[in-house]
Length: 314
Image (cartoon, rainbow, N blue to C red):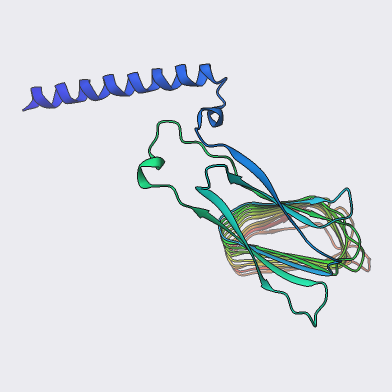
């Protein structure tokens, strides 16, 4: 019995090594660009919006969304369909009230009509079918992007009257160089949120359950708020008039937060970092350790509360 088991193990190792060798050879033949080995070809399609839009609400399930600035001041949606018609997008206007001129809700759903056996080809790498939205800087009052598991990334400047809203369940969010919007809001469940150089004319709001949050060089003219359950939050070079950060078990790491009023509260999460300016420190904990600078005479007021987490600030 042991001899049979030993032979099976040897045979399995031989097939595994042979598979690795074949993969390396195949990768070398395609310069390790495995997408070129796929037998599927894609062509770019464009959905153009007629007239001027003031509100855009884009919904999708698992596809990624990329937002870019429109060089020709036209609003359009670009996507890719396979030339054989097996992978296509179904673009639907789910809301287009004629009495609400300029407001549109768009649902983009990918249709995959491949047979089961077409999924098990040795090289079956399809194109990353991200939806690319081109928006002009002017006109928009509200932009909302919604997805379940797709990643959302954006680098765009909108007019000062615009608000930007991103909602996702498990997809990651990457927002950079978003400025002059009247409000910026992110709602996620388990997806991670990464923000850099985001400026809001009013508030920046980030709500997550378990996803981590990383924000740097962000400026909210009024309030900067973060609410999370267990996700860790890291903030660096943030600026706002006031700030409210709360979590149950997630840690907060702060590296220079320029604000007049800061309230941070956790139950078991730790709070650490540095404020970068003098202020009045108000701290409260049940079982955690507290290490904060001496309070200075200042209009800046910092409040830190935790039950069992440590508070360590410089």
